[in-house]
Image 1 (tube, rainbow, N blue to C red):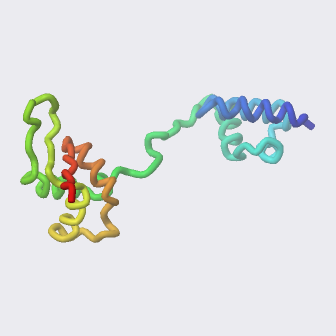
Image 2 (tube, one colour):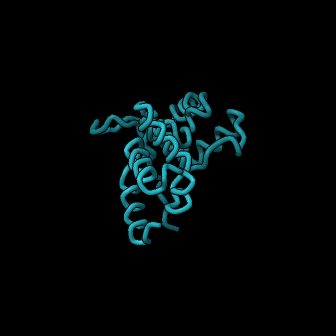
Length: 156
């Protein structure tokens, strides 16, 4: 069996690698120290058995599996609700003005993200559960090229 210090070294080395390089490393270690058994390597080192098996297959065939890292994660709200951008634009346009000094390409909107969210619910028929939170609405407005002006507070 492998000592705990050596296991720790192998785990740290694997953590520094990604994708096909990591799978190739895990496959090589598995062949050299665990008789080519992904199950034994998983038990001893805690690595994914399927990743090891994929690495072994890649070494055997010489064909590398493509990683789709860009396809992971949550989609943007605009992709989930395709009409949302157009609805926001139609609501915000009447509250917009260009930068008076023309120093930026952003358009300033004299409306809050909370007000936009409430208008989408009341005027456009979205449900509260369907729409993202106020902060996400603000981020969508920023991606669309709008900057929200913070309302001034009057001292009482």
